[in-house]
Amino acid sequence: MAKKQYAVIGMGRFGSSVASALTNLGFEVLAIDSNEQKIQEVVGLVTHAVSADTTDEEALRAIGIRNFDVVVVAIGADIQASILTTLILKDLGVPKLIVKAQNELHGKVLQKIGADKVIYPERDMGLRVAHHLISPNILDYIELSDDYSIVEMKAPQPTIGKNLKQLDIRAKYKCNVLAIKTNEHMNISPYADDIIKENDILVIVGKNADLTNFEIVHA
Ligand code: ATP
Ligand code: ATP
Ligand code: CA
Image 1 (spheres, rainbow, N blue to C red):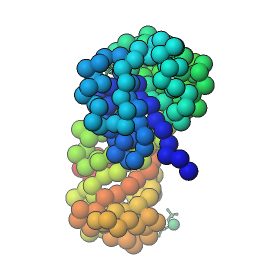
Image 2 (cartoon, protein in one colour; image 1 turned 90 degrees about the vertical axis):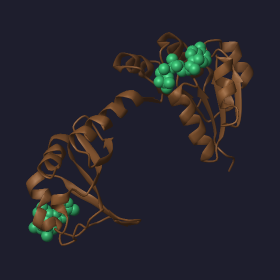
Image 3 (cartoon, rainbow, N blue to C red; image 1 turned 30 degrees about the vertical axis):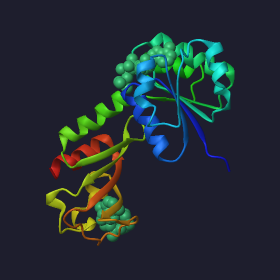
Image 4 (spheres, rainbow, N blue to C red; image 1 turned 135 degrees about the vertical axis):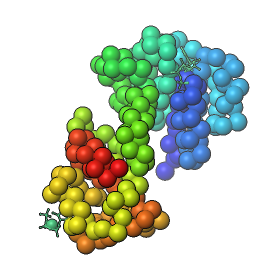
């Protein structure tokens, strides 16, 4: 099978970090930006880099953008350019279109004009930071819906040396421990009598409010 080919448009902080991460993962990545200087900055980090204004349909055709499996649009402040670019890419028949949104309204428009996936890196990072402020134990956080999440947290001090039954997590907090990570070992279906050890990492699913209760009680 051929390597997947990605094009990333907009070499701001987000776009350039996506582009270089994909390159490091072994994919072929074309970086595009209208600013020649930005292109110079990423030349060594990606497979190819070209300067083009992506609101110009002819320029996108000339690049052969349709031949890419996935196109990521990471144009930020210029919302009009982001929307126009997305519209043109959709028209050209790009198979998978992932677009960064600045805010909810921008995101709604992108969805309406056919973006396959809309991402909100600033907002999502904000949520992660907010959780981190509530509890310094939180390492990562996945939003499953508005109300439910999965959190990865350092085992809080008060839980260490106890098992799940003693902590009675499901009954008391309505949260489920999906996994307990000890160093590199993952226990992915913990038993009620599995004991939490110092430096373990817990992966817990639940309602946000219930997860927050668990975090606060064990802070
Ligand atoms: P970040 O927060 O990720 O650094 P940002 O949200 O501030 O980025 P901008 O810097 O506004 O985003 O835009 C990202 C890049 O998109 C810029 O390097 C800019 O040159 C590029 N860009 C803007 N308009 C176009 C366009 N029409 N065609 C190609 N690239 C464009
Ligand atoms: P349940 O009906 O909640 O499964 P149970 O009577 O079957 O309870 P056990 O499976 O032995 O009893 O678990 C005892 C208690 O330990 C559970 O009520 C729950 O609070 C806690 N517990 C066990 N496993 C987990 C888990 N993976 N995540 C969260 N809590 C757990
Ligand atoms: Ca049970």
